[in-house]
Image (cartoon, rainbow, N blue to C red; front, side, top):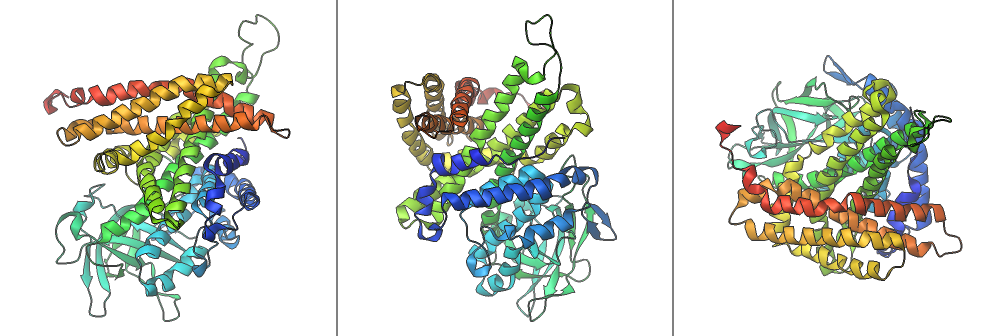
Length: 598
């Protein structure tokens, strides 16, 4: 089994050189966020991940979470690792200073989250959901709610969950039936059942804060009648300490394909008189509030795709460098070589490496835009950056996770038959990452959000603005003497044109043939991810080309950047025109058969 080492140099390159840490550091809130600080934080996170979290990843897979008599026990070592995680201050990295957090920008906290997920995704799901609860309550909780819950959630002494899904509803939140009955003291009593609740019960902390969607008695039908409630596992006394057990119980945990260490719970509310809940904001506004947490989680899940792709790549690379099999191509005698010498293995490794770098660049771009949208002094700039975050969120979530499944599958393939054997570890990465395309909204849901709410609804304005900025790349590449840059130019230009034409088709077709656009939504999302990721790879290659002339340049690193970007252009960007063809001509055949013909 390979060891995990955080790709610190590439992370710092993306943050500091590709995205530009300087613009974020120029914001008053982040004036102290220097390259040295970022390097120190990432380095320490990498050490913690390698020494504490990564060794438990296999343990969690083979010793899953267990439920006995309503009590969930996490795998050996997980509870102790969580305490070390909290004591080191990692949970509050991006939390508000007012509540004990370190108030670092998203561009840094997201990079650290990549490290945690690569080391042990099942462990990281717990703090990831807590951070989403923090975002929701920070924005929509009352002053009293923030005072009572945010300090402990920020420190990690308590954890948080998101309770949306019900057995009969699935992704259709308009079908939520959990009811909330108002009480004379201003609280509510909740009755119902929620499923697929990650870390809904565990032994890490003394309290768990559930955010629950439910309906009040007079609520209108559909999504307009959903409210959001805080339902603690333990109610708090006058000093804010956990006291009486609330009427919420874990009645079962799922037996899953992967992420075995993470307890996915069925929670029952109100079996003994009603679970006490506290309304967040106004009645019937709950889904809008929950989307704050959902969008935060969607970026987090997209980042899980980046992280698992990186981990699968590192493991496959380790195996390819030590597995001896066959001679060099064309050699009839001599020593046998490790499989990294074989061209097809090289192709697969380059596919894994280049796509992971493109995914990382896109996810970090979204994080940087989120920082600017939240803190820039210019309202117009904030609006532009928020529009970019909104556009990129479904792409990061959908595209990064879909590619991570493919990359993890390539990792199994590189191992050959040994990849199908659990002991080598490659299969775990494939099993663990498979959920990422499903939870927090399937790829189809992300794609529909992209084409309907983010493209058609604004008539392609934000996507066209992005494409207009990227058009300058063609001129920069055209002037470059570097052969790798010249090779990148042609497929990149074709990909940008394909995305522009497909965007025009979506805008023009959405009103008259919405089912055609829906049928083409996933190919459009894949085209957007492939193209925008490729554009960022081209920008990285331009930066690398310039850096090579410096006297102290890391020639090996920057040369690898150029070659990797060229591979991406020649192997991934060349798929863009075909995707555009599918989008603009393939929808009708998708809908052609009658139900009885399937």
